[in-house]
Length: 101
Image (cartoon, rainbow, N blue to C red; front, side, top):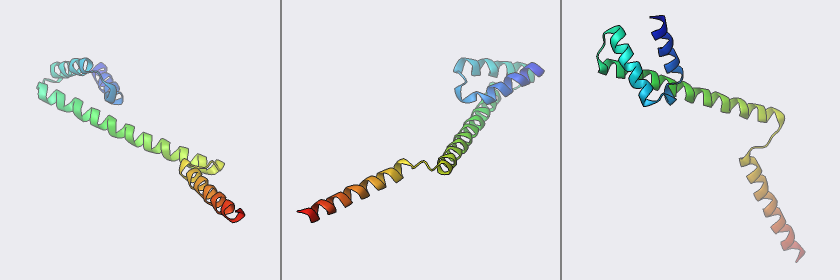
């Protein structure tokens, strides 16, 4: 029983990359151990995979936000800020060269 729960949790954590073969094996094991239908087993695996995808997305968003905050604290300019400055310098250069003529 503990082994099945452990496998299920491990599958949940790595469900996004869970191979089709492993998913089918897990469904068969759940079906046998808990006397559920194949559809119920598939539904459980799908739910675990959805939760894993959602958690992965949240983790990516948190990581992105932390990197952004770290860059701001360090004074690192973003690509967007750099492009704005580049355009501003180009505009000033055109204006300066226009006055020199």
